[in-house]
Image (cartoon, rainbow, N blue to C red):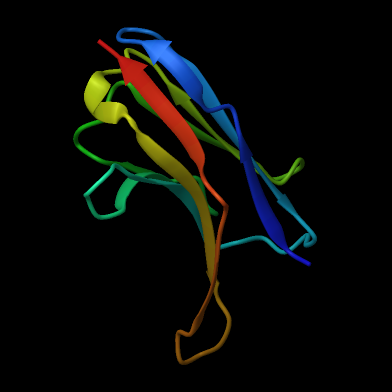
Amino acid sequence: QVQLVESGGGLVQAGGSLKLSCVISGTTRRFDATGWYRQAPGKQRELVATVRSGGSTNYADSVQGRFTIFRDHSKNTVDLQMNNLKPEDTAVYYCNAWTVVNVEGAKWELWGQGTQVTVSS
């Protein structure tokens, strides 16, 4: 069974740092993209950062310059280093991985169970 398991969430003061880790288990398949999304109470889930299999990255404007995403293919992990955290970063953070599985463009997409990040002011 393929699973994405997150860890590293917690409570931190504004200005602090946290590192989220996601282990992709049950497969050695290389995904087209992996990344992190977040969902705050009462809000829609939003993209935080993604990294394509070739190494290109994409960040939400709100985290650009503060967050860094790392993909380690040998360990099958994707990590998110979060620095200078702000109260508005408080959310449940979800690991995501997807890959195109056929010529029609159908995707195989997986989500982790989420990890809570709380930033106090």
